[in-house]
Figure 1: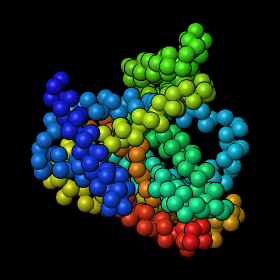
Figure 2: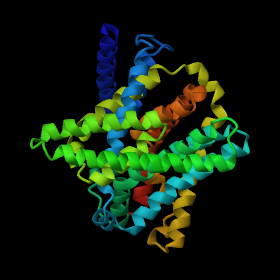
Figure 3: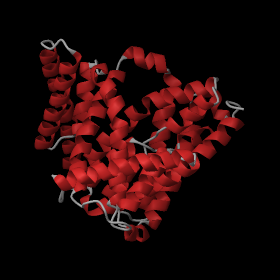
Figure 4: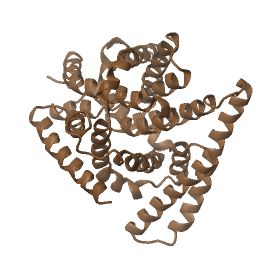
Length: 383
């Protein structure tokens, strides 16, 4: 216990210091976290204990459940009306374009099907946070700015649902001697089972919440129910990600927990990035050169072509803005938690998966602010 607490203290202090350094250098915080992790890890100073990653993995499953539950508030007619059809379809197609291209290219080069599917699913992650910061810095106003802000409001919904479904398919494929017919049945069973569990727990949550009047008590009840639902879905072999999304959608009052996640999630993201980088063996980088290259390049290609395709189909004014999709390149924050989920499905490729995600996040974070600023200037959104 003392070792774990010491490691956590060191990690958090290093995170704060390197975050300040990154800010001074006008770099995203993510870059500072990864650098802090590499410095503390076995490849350089070897300060952190190897056991800390196990505790972080458990914590990541719980936090992902909270995030999945919190997006349930977005599943209502009024919210989707407020966002509008164009941002929604652009978000879907830029995410699925990335997934399609990454998965397809990897399969063409005989990469394991489950690995290709999981990396494709991870490629759907989009974070327009850095883009939004640039827009706020320049006090930008305009049609494209409005679309980007709306896409930022729903990108996590598309990503989590996509990863939840693809991870279910990948788990079914990984079972040996499965026929195609049996695999389809298992996938459908797992998706339906996950949704049913989420719906049932939402009714239980509504019942218990009736008896609690204070806000803190309601938050504690929600947290307890989420943890129990994750345990139950794991016992049945279903997707806790999909069940938590379903529970949040049915409950539809996730503002109770949103104020907690908004304050605590940045801290956990810092912890996850630093620990992941600390546990990374730099020797593994030589083994992921090709797959990493495919992920980094074709994720961007997929987003660009997916965006161009759908904007032409719906005849959006954005069809004329060929560089618009470059504002969707960053994949900060939730990607690291999803990487832990992927490692559970493909444990034999856990280190390689983590290396690809960390390297790609580092590269995207380094180049995206400059690229995004140039694109927004070219689009006339900022001066």
